[in-house]
Picture 1 (spheres, rainbow, N blue to C red):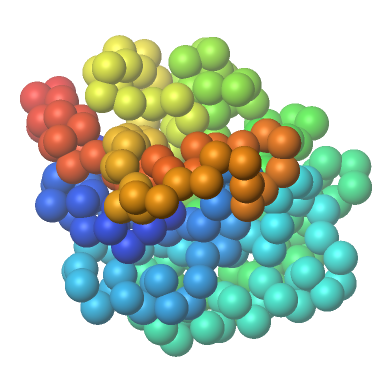
Picture 2 (cartoon, rainbow, N blue to C red):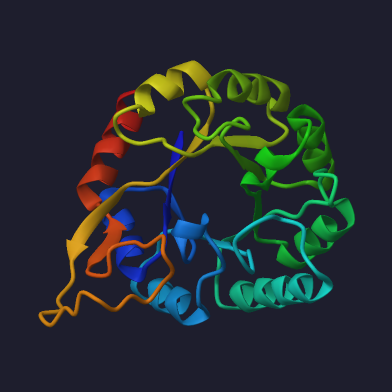
Length: 246
């Protein structure tokens, strides 16, 4: 069984490695569900750690139906991160009707190889998860990140169990969304997957002493300006201990 930790900073990669995680998914802007991180951040994390890193290839938040220019940018990013030492890439592309965009996905997969390929939770936005599973198996992805087409894995547990059974040894189903050290054991027993995707943050206080309270760097829906979110090493250790006891 493997635990992958979803994160968005160099500090978090270091904390996940120290906590004993098997792998990380490196993103930026998890508030948007994760987009492509900066190449500089990835290269810095790679320099300071040896943990396997999957890198998110997603040019923006929102849906997964991309323009020609966005798709071109995705292919450029794949090559950049592959050349920089990524262990694998994470992506998802859909057609307007919600089905897997087979042709574009095939192009991305060919660029990524021989690195690993994960199809992310765009899978959860498809109209038929069982048909989408077979499509992705035919495309040859290594794993599928999914919450069972529900907001969280806890709510999607029945579908996740069915997907794991249908997939067999043909592809890895990696449950995600809302999985943490509190519910990990329960979900593992219910689903029976081989890999799990966890988000285990902690809050670090900003070092800023001068804090003007009337200026904001984002829109109306805001995260706190002076609280920094990083992966919590102790929470990772707790989840890893649960994995090893099961």
